[in-house]
Image (tube, rainbow, N blue to C red; front, side):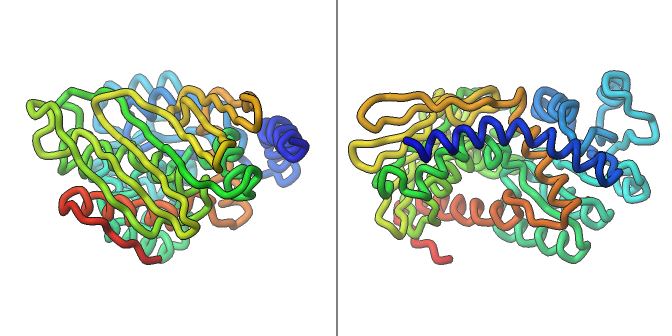
Length: 365
């Protein structure tokens, strides 16, 4: 318990203090916040990223890229973005000449991630690409290669890598505080029965819930255990064939790890589920809800049920964005690197293969 209390004290004091530290860092070095351009002004950019960027210390929203003049006008007024920093897809590459932009954040449909991440790198800008990183492993490798060639930093939009609750789950699992993990349940789903949504379009989304939500389930398991899976078995299911025609409505999948730990997951576009539960035997620790962007709650059991209690920021993306800016300033590799995105796509491809063939798939790293 003492170790956990010390960790909580560190996290509750330390993570909120990140902003203070970074403010001091900026004032001591006379470094101005890094400018961020959001590419794609959909729901996530509008309701999460743009508000988060109003509270970051090491970066700020300086430019937008959109295909809708009405959005451009609204965002310009709301966030005081000058016309010279408003881009459309037709003149996107001109952003290379804008010193107000240091980071380009790709918030587009999955099918556009590779193209625009590569073009952003070629423009000499650091890149954040939303998850999933791309449609397949090859595209991930192309993005990584382009960023290395251009000598720019790359990060994937994994906000939960910097969330105190998920950091605690990782600590408890990796440090074997209650012993080695035997079983994990890691699931995420919600209802999206609208065929007009691009995520249900196989060409744009890449395969439905496994691409969009499955990333969280995979990361929750592998990062809490601290290992990469060596075997995957999966099933895809469709209950509403009027909506889900060329993609699975959901997946159930099992991952086996080198230590012998097993994780079971469900990811679906038809039912709400949001939990990460790890057990070492009779002791357990869990988040419920776990993966959503509006709040996390946790508990652990070591003889009695006790809450995890952390001070969280208004937006999980604040820590994510400021951490990437610090990586650029200090020339470090992001914890949410392109290689992390590549790992997840390798696992997703194995899950898809298993669901399509009915056979387990062996993963080699």
